[in-house]
Length: 256
Image 1 (cartoon, rainbow, N blue to C red):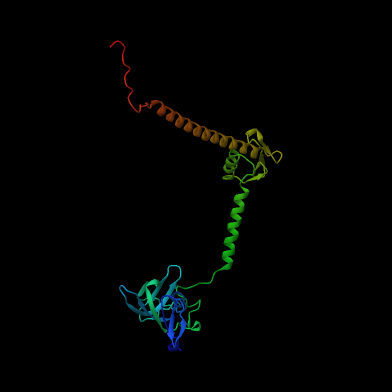
Image 2: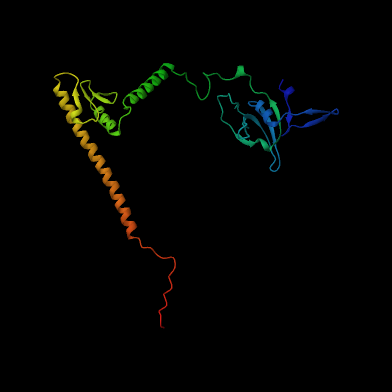
């Protein structure tokens, strides 16, 4: 059967004279793609013409390259043993090729259990658990982000959430479901949600006072840094001396 399908194909579609009637030839790229896995004999064009015989490992339509394994060992794309002597040839350099034998039938190919490298079954339950955990993390991050609040309010919330349970209730910050901090988030804006829970209120007020001082220091440091940068630039511009492009000629004196 293989002998009956041996063929020699030119680089482009062409016609042969056989009894006076032309016979259409298929392009080399198409013929090679159909011969993957089979054993072929390739003849390259001059200069450096040569003939190679081996197993056609692949024919890439993107790079227009073919890979041929000239080793005597079986090295079809579906073979578990793929070591060999590979040659990369541009399709444009192929003058002709001949199909020596067909590729193994699909029934002789490898399955998922014998593929190399090995293909393992996916644990769909573990994948779904990872997906659910990732979605939960994203949703938690979204609930920790205040809507319609200032950067200072978000900084205060983030500071509390690092040590206490905190959540947003509109634009108000609720700490441990015991104290609520309303805008503009000052110490006097703290109110206890549970009557008589002065300990929680006192603690939240102390933490808020400390965090507001940190924010004030951070803002002052940023302001000073920007002011120093502006002052240095102004001083540098002041010290620059303008150099005229040309020397003005002296004004002639009257009377000689």
